[in-house]
Every structure is written in structure tokens, then in C-alpha cells.
Length: 102
Image (cartoon, rainbow, N blue to C red; front, side, top):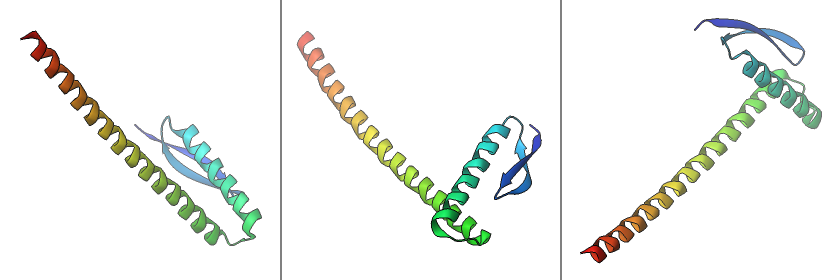
């Protein structure tokens, strides 16, 4: 699959970014999300230094991803526990059915 050059605008500056073919729309949406977040942070914090803004935004996004990963792992663990309990219950029920047939 070839890469496609896509132009994105972040904080009023255009940047060309290589992107896998077919993923252009996702990249544009991600760039818009980043731009919106940076503009929101600028108005809330009054920080105008782009490096600081980008650093804070990167940390916020990483924190959100980490939180989602942790939530996902907890959900996965709970599902595994439930499946184990269900498996044990089904095993018990099948044992009783087999004993009743003998």
C-alpha cells in the first residue's frame, strides 16, 4: 500500500503528512481534533507558546489513552472471570445431567 501526502492545518499552519492510502479522512479528523484541543487549551490557559501547548496536549492524549487501556483491561478481566464462572456452572449442570442419565 502506498502513502498519500495529506495537508493538515494545526494552529493556522499547514503541514504535509504522509498517510497510508485510504486513511486520509481519519488523519484529517485527528488533525482537526488536535487543532480544536489546542485552541481550547489556548483560551482556557492563556498559554501561547506552541511547544508548551503541544506538550500539554500530547500528555493529555497519552493520559486519556492510558486510562482507556486500563479500563479496557479491567473490563476484559471481568469478562474473563464471568466466562470462567459460566463455564464452571455449565460444567456442574452437565455433570448433574449425566449423573441423572445413568
